[in-house]
Image (cartoon, rainbow, N blue to C red; front, side, top):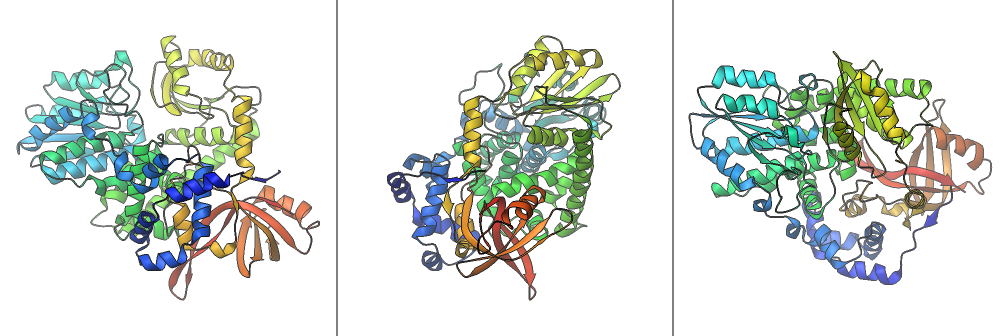
Length: 600
């Protein structure tokens, strides 16, 4: 693998550097790190800002306007909630019920990270404002996706003579039959959702959904997750009570936005920045803080949410314990935040072990080289694992994946895409051809159902398409993977530099985390274990640090690097990472590179 340094023009670097509102950046870091501004100014030097500017340029952030929206004035990126179609009508409807002490409001959420966050924000805001009875329902995976008939029957049988409003959050847009049943029982329904609408399944009630194609949207809010939609409604609702505290809920909105892999629009970036600022301050929600402490995360980044926190919360829903995932936000009078966090981590470990075992069997027994997609429908796995397995297979093989399981006569499938392939467009076409029964979701992740007699039709349909990325896309990806943005000295392995460069919400889709290079580091010691895991102690600029390597790289290190390196010197490439360890009873941060490659 050949590595080259990203060619950054000095003039562009100066423009970006001069566009940074460094005073505002100092203020943000002071808030997050609970430190003194004068101290920061003595530590964060021009070299650090130069490298930070290269991180911006590496992500095509080149203009003052882009920098302002991302870093300097994130407030300006927040769009008025009144522009969201039907949001004000929804707030008016909720308001009438909240002010009626004899009324009942039932919130029906979803079992994933977005749904759990949506339910938490909706319940918390309404409970803070209103005087009526409010109940929140988190379904399990086995209850099926979205509002179901069983829950509708529960409400009708117990509350049909009451003043009742049912609110769906992060679901409901395809639940016409269920909602019709409630409406016929004189029970009012409000749908808040962000999934694609299907004309023949559209409910006959008030709908707030920026992806509802059957109603003209005054403003394009299609980048919002389900949590973002109910957040906007709650913001208007608060205004009716002369309150304005919605930014306090941005930690949950940030988690939902990243977990649902939503586009990083300017407003979504602002939500994520606000949320991360609160999480990384002394006002961090206790449940999230407990996870961070146990996982040795001192400073939570967007990547930490994507790859650590969100999968843990999602694991609870996948393994039929959504209520446990919700307790991370709501907490519990019996269990401490640490006890709840440990239970969630244990559930996630179980999910990872089951998924890993299944993935290993698939890799051993299947060959997808001649297929446009990965399509498996005969696996013996828990329903809650099909989404994570589809995602992992897509990551491994760089192809869309459809993983289905059978219940009765119907197959339910989870679908993941890649290479910016709009998979839901093809699923909708299959629906129009009557090959699948139902579907819902987003461009990159969705679900569908079908019968056994259509399996061959689905396989043939996808194999008739051209779904591989273009040559230009492949070349561009290779260029990104083989490019580092700057040489780095381990002297910069500290909290201040790490927090500075992570002001950018890297998701490795829209914003690529920087790869650094440390040249001519001296090997002090090395140990490669039988499993292929290796630890190498290095020294550079009088700073000693350690790196970890795994199977492929450890083989390369043993066979190619060690026998040929001169004076025990190697060059390493990777992303800056942080871990914590105990020293004299205190937790300390240790920094290194997550290694992409080693050369001589």
